[in-house]
Image (cartoon, rainbow, N blue to C red; front, side):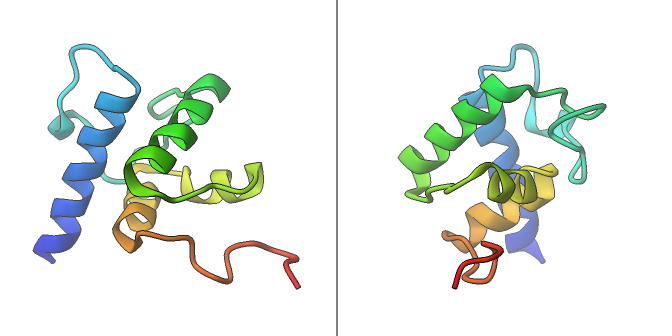
Length: 96
């Protein structure tokens, strides 16, 4: 359990640092806070910034928008991706 919480805190810090969110600390973000919409209110430019930052820091490439939407749903879903260190092999629909 501690690893999961540590992963969430690291993800929160990564989001704040990567997106340069002023006056926010990791503890200000709820674990299941949506990243887009009524949650953290990120936009498409933020999504692109996240894709680049994830590739640079974690070496994980987000291949398309659908995969990004799946893993950028909330702080927790992003944390799960970063903790795994790679995309799940079955996360790309339609890949034969």
